[in-house]
Length: 75
Image (cartoon, rainbow, N blue to C red; front, side, top):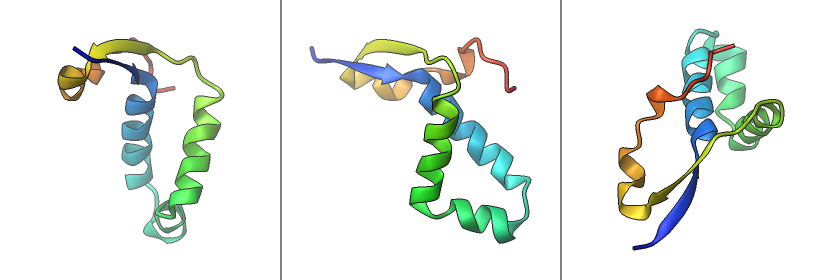
């Protein structure tokens, strides 16, 4: 069985960015962060300022990881 390292923080972060951007106006915020490069810069900016949580999982089970159980606050 092949194992892989999964950045759990990244998964939660991307979901939170999606949720937050939905509350912002389409123009200019949502439109700006629809650009892949800007979205990646935002993700990198936040990841550099947070602690990351990793897990080692079987590649086949990677899709079934429950990210909602992570001990992170939304702040």
